[in-house]
Image (cartoon, rainbow, N blue to C red; front, side, top):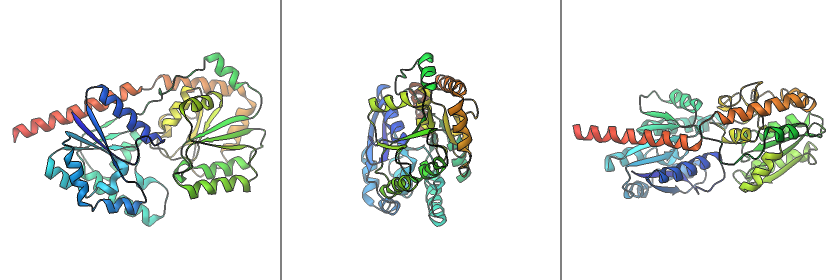
Length: 368
């Protein structure tokens, strides 16, 4: 099949969603599909909306002569008006690749209402859905009532070769000194860095150190606010901003950390959680969103409510003192990773889903 993939910006952008898109694209190509990435200009939400009124966009998407057009759901403001025209002009299949819903992100109430209206119209305009989690599937169902084809193709965590043995994990967990906490994600409000810093400020500095690995460029004002908060709270000696890391640097920080710590982040899935568990890192995540599909509270990590800033302290203090408990959590995290689908499995699910949709559409066309 000839498949188009619509995204904003560069496919090399360092986020979990773009990582998913990149890996799926390459693996679909290995399965014999011809895949072309269509990159739309990014920018503010109003600028993205303005693109929906451009007559050139429909012509550009039609010119590809695709069998299937995969559309990253976060491109909805630019596509919600185009899809119906596109279908009438070409008859191609439109499939939304849903990482998380934009209207679930924290923002002003009126902005959320506008986004939900636009997002709902976009979701109604496609022929099927590829979801990254059961949570995302439920969120879509809560926004529109539909009976369209859909599949859950979970992200995987086997991008790196985890270098630590059971013995190595045991040595790391019993290493003296503060717990090495890892925040792995771009610095934007949805990731919950500000409440994490506030929660850590109330915990003795001998208990923890925090490394923040991820781009600071997606929301420079928010990143600047995070840096300022670190200074205001007197955390400069305990918090490191590492910026985006190359793969070898990321493997090193994953190997040397004790705990993946993003307890206030809303995730549509959270690829970083599973990648961290591959290295034996128990995860502290948020009850909201899909983190609970990977984190089993008390077994391979912990889940906190998004407003429970006080709940982090007893967890970290206990794990700092009880390194055997930390070791058991770490081994359970490894077991969780080992039991999950790999990227080959995830791509096979997408491949089968697209082939089935195409076959059904062809059969329907013959009947007509």
